[in-house]
Image (cartoon, rainbow, N blue to C red; front, side, top):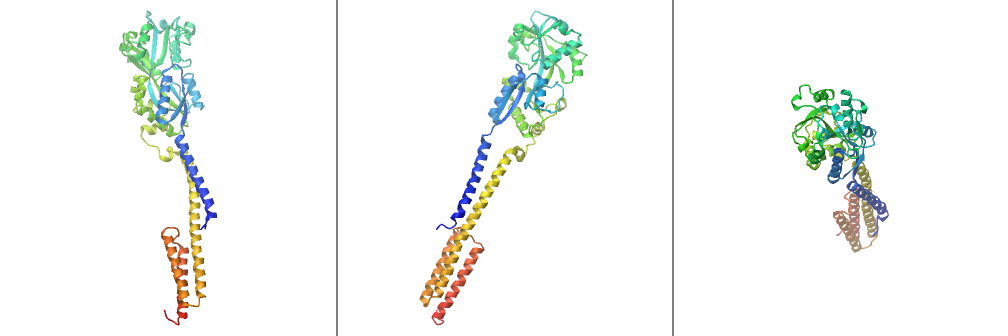
Amino acid sequence: MGFGRPADRPARHQLGFAWLLILLAGLSSACARRHGTILVTPGTEGEVIAVKLAALLSEVDDFDLEIIEGEGSVRNLDLLRRGEADLAIVENSVPFQRGVQTVVPLYPSVLHVLHEKGESPQSFRELVLGKRVYVGARGGLSEWVVELIRRHADIPADAFTIVEDRKTGNAEVIIVFGVLDQAESEEIAANYEFYSIDRPQDLGRGAAVDGMSILFPHMKPFVIPKRFFGTGNPEPVVTVSVDTFLVARTGIPDIEIYDLARTILQHKQEFATVSPVVASSLREDFDENALTFPLHPGARKYLDRNEPGIFERYAELAGVSFTAFLASASGLLALTRWRRRRKKDRIDVYYAAVIEQRASSLRAESAKEVETGLGKLRQLQDEAFGLLIDERLAADESFRIFVTLTQDAMEELRQHRDALTGGGS
């Protein structure tokens, strides 16, 4: 019949807009990929681990981790603290800086001290004197340790030459921190032998590495087992190790670091392809007191299994969803009003029909015409109840008024009919 159509259009428009917002919010949340950056020193195990971590995060968490070339642990921490990256892989011995927090320990980085085959140095002075020495990335922990030992042994700074590249610089001595990896055994055995800083039997009895661990608590005495690298170390080698950590800049949301720590620790066997040592070193029961940088709250929540709440986890999506909810609520409210208005328009039609039939029947001059009018009122009443059952009319005050109006009209018509028949039925 067309009643209520003008009110129908704005309601449908608002409802359609609301559902569009909800659809867009769903699509954006489904398609969005998180993004982060990690600083690594080129040519180190950290770079290999970062590549593996990036692949793992992309596959498991839909997270794109961009690898940025760094300049050694100390410099990388400066860049991290300034917000130029999100993550970094550094040794635990670097000086404390504010604005940096630990995510998870990765592996022990062992000091490899190698010299060319055929040499038999009896001291660090003999090891480096007049030699070309490779210390890895400049400004890194290895160069710092070499400088420390040089000063302690009172060796002139120009007594040896530091080369930038191990191969092109024809390095005669290699002093670098790295993960123990038996895959390098053949290369080491073919060209180099390990230099042992102390004798294994002197450990705990005032050996040089004992003194280093006292002065620098993050350095620990470490013994490379006999023939771990084949003929590269025919005897046990005494050296030092420093734990390597994944750190993050302060300010990254707890849920991001929670997910990162969870992914690494739950998929630690994936890192066995880098080195079995890395896979076996990824543990949850590490000593927090040994950390240079405080543990990130997100990592602590994972270790404590303190699952983040739904609002914390989906804080950003919640904002979009709330906006969509408001738009949806507005649309639903408009739809409800339109439906009420439409039902009101329908009952108004029945009001008019009852009033018109009442007036027409009261002008009738025969009882038969009045009876016909009563029948039409009953028919209008039946139609209205039918619409009520079909939920096309609301059982509200308007409907109750209609029922009362109909009953009153029918009573008036009965009285008029009785008057025309002289009081008979």
